[in-house]
Amino acid sequence: MTENAEISEVDLALAGALEINPRAEWSVLGTTLGLAPTTVSRRWAALSARGDAWVTLAPGPRYLDAGSSAFLFLSTAPKRQEAVLDALCSSPTFGTVSRMTGEFDVMADCFAPGYDELMDAVSGVLSGLPGVTRWEVVLATRLHREGTQWRLGTLDPGQERALGGGAPNRRPARLGAVDAALVAALSEDGRAGWERLAARVGVSPQTARRRTEQLLAGGHVTLRCDFSTAFRPRHREVTIVLSVPAAHLEQAGRFFADQPSCRVSAQVLGRGNLLATFWVRDLLEVHALELRVLQQIPSAVVIGRQAVVRTDKRSGHRLDRAGRSVGVVPLPLGG
Image 1: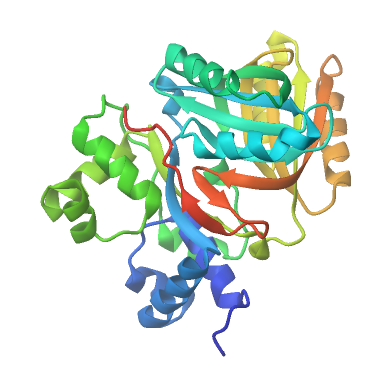
Image 2 (image 1 turned 180 degrees about the horizontal axis):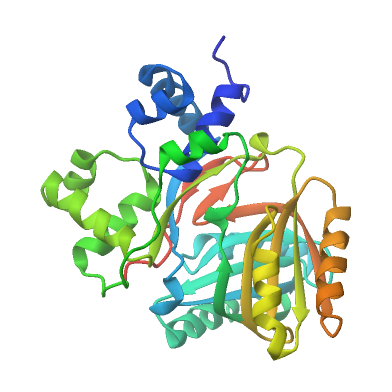
């Protein structure tokens, strides 16, 4: 196969493998994909250099045990929108920033070590943005599904099992200075070698490996493989917000979390109490999902629907118009 700037079947398989095990050894990836480790390494180097794929650190499944998160919806004055987006993308607090259709035209997810820090950071940024005409903060209270669980679907079940990728096995501990430094380094390059991480943090390679593995095992943070829109040209991102009776909130959250197209299913505190984001090939799929959940819970009400027009930042990585990574602003996950 000729290697060029196009996304090949090898690239798709490699990205699918790194979704499951973002730090898998080249030898393991090669064996799983039926390729030479040097071929896998070379293809990843090309993808990374172009910004078409990258491994970064993101909030983990137990992030809310120790940190705070929210979804921010903004309305902006048209002539000020670019300045607002640049301010949000430049701030570590805002992990993913997207332009949307619907009632609000910008959506961002927000992260901070605690509630007070979160609200101070959001208010501090917004107070200096005259282009914001309206805003709403929706606090996340429980996560049923997060972005690392979505799959490209390029591997068969046997390949997925071969790659492993374990779930958190202990409660997150309070992070120290070394952990905070590792968080920053892994945000920039989640596949950096132990020697490189050690040099960056100022510890031995053995310590860098042990502390990274402990960090990931706690579930406060996780590694994820992200990629440009070239990997999913037909997918469209849609977010819906629902108001669900308390007795059925868990059921509805799990229903969305079980859908292959679901990226996020979160219980929230706002006008609605459940937020779900999907990557779908046909926007009609969203109507079908709404119908199915309302058949199970007739008293649920959909109060908001918004489709992404463009994502300017994803999990700390600033993106160009093609969704390629062009820089990173590490999330405040280190303490």
